[in-house]
Length: 190
Image (cartoon, rainbow, N blue to C red):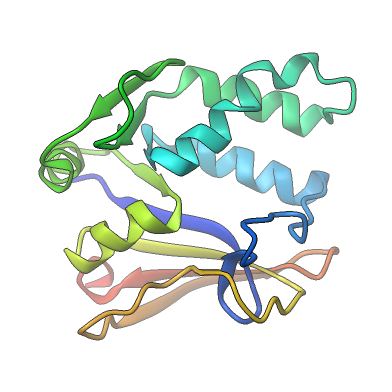
């Protein structure tokens, strides 16, 4: 059986973007990007909602041609292009870049893929993750806590009507001040 991982940069107060949808507060140096690359390389596929897919496709397909791209960014661009992407959206008409559009029964499709032995997926974006979280489909939470307080914005965790018990698997502190927290859900840690 595979696992579904929800991993993002998050502010100390739990936001993944500002109220104006800015990500200008996220600091990713080569050390941190190398960890992102290792995690991405280990995934069988990426799962995105519409907004995260559009954000990713806006830069990563051509990142190698960006003169300011670091070696870690170029490596991530190659990983990203090669990995299958499942895009959960009822509004998009088409997707590109090794992507497959799932318009209906998204949770069932994610559960079907997850049932495959060793088929690990990373869900990107809080909106898609919140749906899968409420259904108990997320096995791991990986938070890259940035040393900033935003005060408002889009939350990493949505409001829930139930608790999700977690088991701490790993912590790490980076030179940039980012703290990595890796948790398994109690059903995954058992």
